[in-house]
Image (cartoon, rainbow, N blue to C red; front, side, top):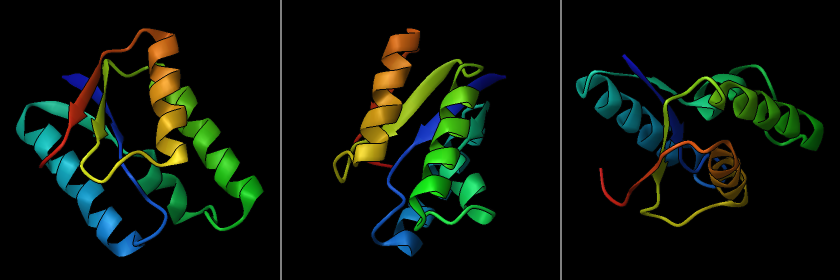
Length: 103
């Protein structure tokens, strides 16, 4: 299975953004991929509202990205600062970046 890193918004409308990330993960599974959405995992036990914990979660996600085959970026609502960091990291790693405008 291809490992796909899911990059989408989290902060702001957390409920709506969580649903978006879940839909992207489902789409990946339906396409035979194994998705990883760090913002769905790390926010379960780290407080995204605390800068140090948010940074720790992002760092963990960026580290995990190294094992992924490609990065899917949901661009339909624009890129947040965190998303830009993930995309920049993916490009530095030479990972294919797939932009998705709609789900």
